[in-house]
Amino acid sequence: MAMRNDLLGLIEQHYPSLPPSARQIANYLQQHPIAIVSQSTAEIAKTTHTSKATVSRFFRQLGFTSHQDAKDTILAMREKGLPVALDDQEVDHFQKELRNMSLTYEGLKTSAVNDVVELLAHSERITLIGYRNAYPLALHFRQQLKQVRSTVRLLPQPGQTLGEDLVDIPSNEVVVLLGFRRRTKLFKRIISVLQNHTTILITDPTGQIYNQKVDHLLVCHPGQTLAFDSYAAPMSLISFLANKVFERLGDKAANRAAYISKMYDDLEELEP
Image (cartoon, rainbow, N blue to C red; front, side, top):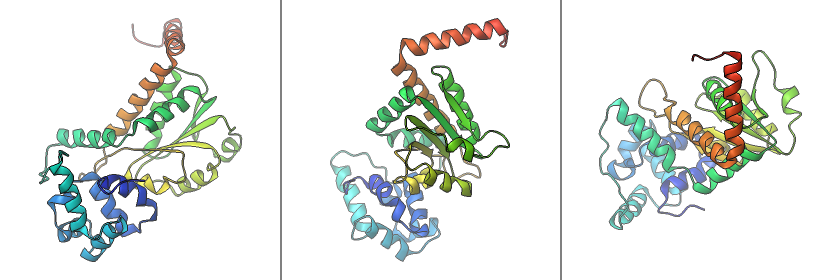
């Protein structure tokens, strides 16, 4: 249960029960948390294409009496040493990417990361599922994990359906779902079908609507001020998790990687 001074935690906690207009506000404040103290209710409403009444109601849904109550809570923590900037000026692309990465890693809980790494290291099999822009991310994640352990597969296979594969998932398998903004309609059904299995969801803030339907949720921030989303943060998270799995498996992972490298040489697959 998130405390009043953890506004981002409160947003994540209440996200599934928020109506669509309130989720627009939630997404914006997760990307721009300083807007809570630097912008007025009217400014937040204008930026999120909602109304002042909707913004006020949003803060009440989080447990505050008003936007001002939330602002006062954050400023009180600032007085105790919590760094809070008071303006949000536009920065260049590199700075935006740094900010996305910072938001992503600041939101990761150590206990959640440890649980996910343990599953990725020791589950009998890993199944990765991704559609649209998430598909190349899932493919890359598979390639990384295959370097350090066996029985890692990617779904869906090109041109294939999922039913025959999902029906055979045993209890000791972990399913990693990757889904970002503009997910397919099928994505929701897949999560429902897998509710009795162990699942990890890697997503953007909008994917928090599933946080009570998966076992582990890892949120990446792709940014939302440019025409196209950035997938630098998800790719970084995949690298981070793969390296953690390598560390967790120790000599077993190192020996497998060395054997694969020898196989590359035997097949002459890579440049010298």
